[in-house]
Image 1 (cartoon, rainbow, N blue to C red):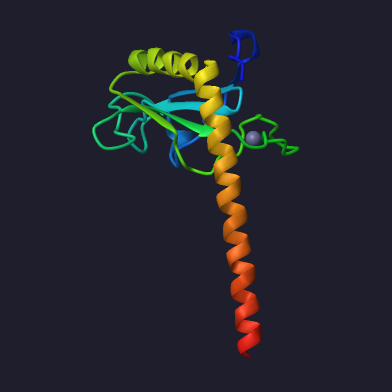
Image 2 (image 1 turned 45 degrees about the vertical axis):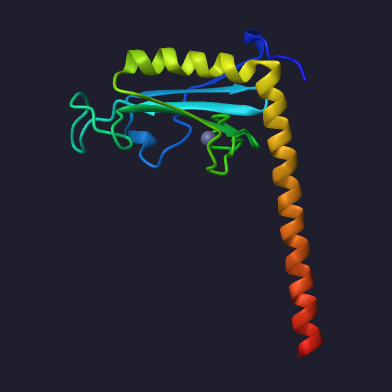
Length: 150
Ligand SMILES: [Zn+2]
């Protein structure tokens, strides 16, 4: 597994995780090899455009999460390129101001661009696919059993 050079990182302008991502004034999303590094935060209160940042999670106004990057959004009316994610975060950063989130996002991208972490991501994806296949097999067996009993 090789490191992903900065020139191959893909920068996305849409908020890429978090149910209230559309309300976040700070959002930064970068696809680094097999993973998506997504940061959101600086969320004003409902009805306000700016300031009085609300927490996006307990004790933090901004956060970074890392996910396996699935298929990029190619919806005809969007094409934002934000990849599908399954909600299982592989890494996490918490901050209380946008500047720290900016720095934290960059550090997280650098960490996951390394050969070591790209290898971890690949291994994780492999094991997850294996687990999914095992579950499907168990389900098939269960169907077989219930058919034999009927
Ligand atoms: Zn989209």
